Length: 81
Image (cartoon, rainbow, N blue to C red; front, side, top):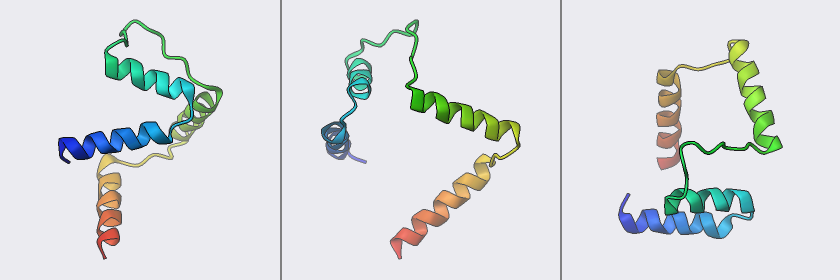
């Protein structure tokens, strides 16, 4: 992806975002204001998703990287048809 394409995609993401916290996080990352010692605070939704993911891992509902990469490749090829 070219620099111009990347910039356009970043602009599109920003233009479509309505979450102030998400925008602030992006701003901090892009402007270098993010500190490694800062605590990242999860929204309740993200906390719930994280808990669900951890439960899935405990229950063995996981996929290998090889499997996921093959699924992605197959999906991308189906989009070209």
